Length: 359
Image 1 (tube, rainbow, N blue to C red):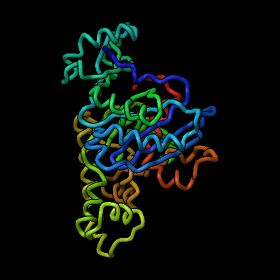
Image 2: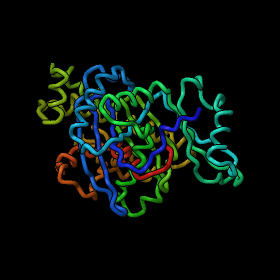
Image 3: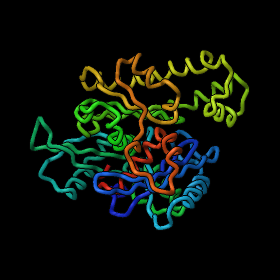
């Protein structure tokens, strides 16, 4: 039956981004139209616990989340996590506009066999009503999201092992879209009406969301990330994985690094972003993207926004969703600013505290 893990309620929810190499958590409060960062926590992931965005060792991930738990106010009981990758499906379907949510749920269950390429017994689904279909006002666009129940349940179990109750299981691309709207102040004033691509390049996964007028038109997940950059450093300079990661942060690399490692990886990023945008333009019939927001750990590579602007001809910024937020006394603003591009998914999850929409 339709899974209701996607619904959010009133209590503050900790956004927990369970990544390949780190677990990142953000807690937000809302005051009028403004957000405040109440807590930030980040912990390294135990090696081998995650593969291709799937949890391999729930107990190990739970141990890491338990460390996060100690850094979060004790009164925060609920958390949200997200799924991504090949086991997640999102699509817009057209349903009778007169149907209630319960009637929609029943109808979707009837038609789900033809919509989802997995056995329904293995899938968790949810949906959200959107606008009336412009071509047929008797129909409403409905965003359907489905994920393998195993992927959803592994995150629920890991949060439970870390002493959090799961309030929401979301989809990473939609978390990215939600947080991206907090970055619009970094763009020209017309950003809300323009076509914007948001690209989050994590350690192993690249997420892309296309937004216009506050709505997500397109999402895409691609197995590509900063780990390839790290492995190039390991290969060229004989470092361990930990040494390579530290060298990236401290810039402690030979002078030849720029053309041996950095330039080839920048070219790979450019190719991935260009290909993703072109796929959207081809399928949508649109001519161009107006603005580009990049995030994830790879967005911290110096000059990557300038490179993309020059090569793609698209005004590009590095995301900082917290730039205009108040910061609580327990949060180190300098650390928050440094990590901001990596915290987009966690931020989008934390924003579920204040929304009642499904996806």
